[in-house]
Length: 337
Image (cartoon, rainbow, N blue to C red; front, side, top):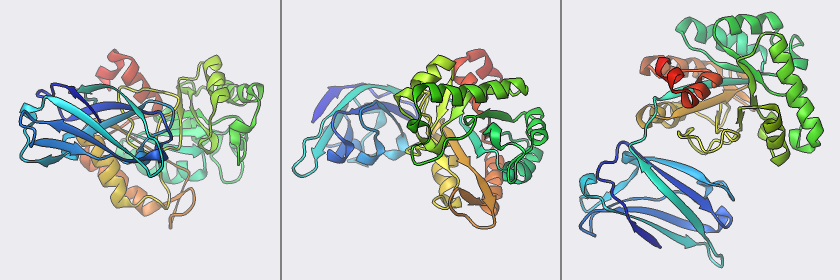
């Protein structure tokens, strides 16, 4: 148990906490955050899950006021102490490190909708439905697949680009599983990512040339080193632990929720769209195909259209990956989004 004096009396809608597990997250049976009122029997509490945390790195946790349970009638205007209590799993030793808490730090809520591989559905279904409604998306393209059966043609990619969509980097050949890029040597990784960057630039798709989506969601230190050498700005993973927080701790591990059979329309609305709006965060959503029924790497076209209609109704701003990045790193750009 660790307790420290912390004045939360002027906290805004959200509270930012950084947690770094020093042991495997599986060793954590329970973790409780508590914010104490001036009267100790009054407090707010929140219980995260150990599976919410990535091991051996800082995890940026953003909590909305509404996430906290109120015991004894605690008042935000009286909060003056923060406590974290950790219980280890049976027979285990658990340890975490806690860094600073920041409150009253909010960003404009946004949504980034992405399609990997540039399958035909990205053009014939996603673009066809989103573009007339004023929404933009990002296509992570594999150059060797462009124009082949089941994938977008170069002309279709150019049309989407002219409409404001971003065509981005998904490597030149899309290395296959089970290891994807992580099964390659450093030089091979540089060639895969760099060749895609060159292809994008040579075809005028400069906006997304330095934004990467990892094939299969796989990455390692060699991939990160190659990205640094090539000037890659962001790496989008397939981790979906939470909304994308700001400030961003690691642009190489951007979290995104997959549009597939594991995601219901109700969950997409409540846990991703609504929360992004109320918490001032960004919902990253990525998919591959849109069909009549959801499946592996496939989401229901009717659910997709309903989600887009909901985004429009809620007036959540849809931006491309490069617009999102520029909005966080360039204040002047952020002001005109």
